[in-house]
Image 1 (tube, rainbow, N blue to C red):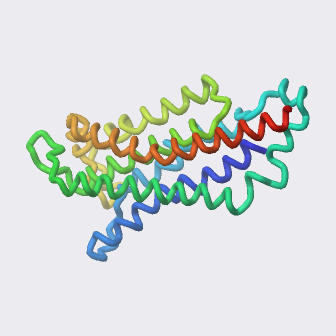
Image 2 (image 1 turned 90 degrees about the vertical axis):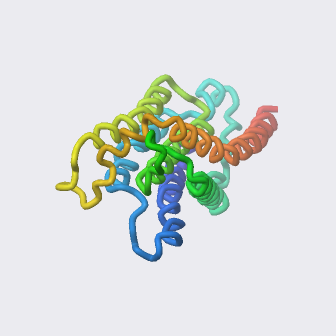
Image 3 (image 1 turned 120 degrees about the vertical axis):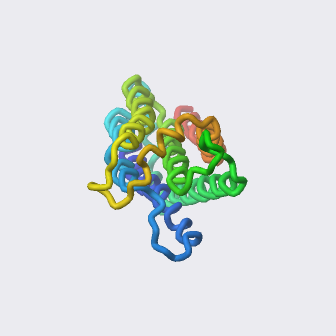
Length: 237
């Protein structure tokens, strides 16, 4: 029940977190209907970079061990009355996704407004640079979300999560080496991401944005852990 409920909530959460920056971007693109994300980003977010960690989570997660449940059957009462699948729980996930999307978008927007030279030539990186930082931070953020939710992290879960994060820059690097104008109308990734990878400001912006996204998650995690273990102790006693 725990993993099923959180898996369902997670899919709504990560897609809201992914698409809300596009909505916010529409207020700043002069009503041009320009997409913030490159087509490769739109395709790969759900199909590649965020699909495998949640798959492993949905198959292996156990918030309470079998031995403990057999010893204390009353532990099933922790999630009675559909506690994890009610409207308030669902709304909490959506609000967290919306808050993190706002933090991520506007923090990068502020960094961009400071005219930080992301390229070796001292120039700005354009919209694709903005989108690359945003997209990378979002993937890292939604992957870290599972670490806060999971109570039974396995080696397989750790491996899949790390590989998903490492696959992102590698995929973009490979795509930036080829002219994809025949596949997509947007060819802005061509050789641009290769230049971004060399910039320390690029990686610093990603780390700063990801860390800022995690702050509300940490606060919520501490609160939920205190509530959870209080409920656990009350049932066991």
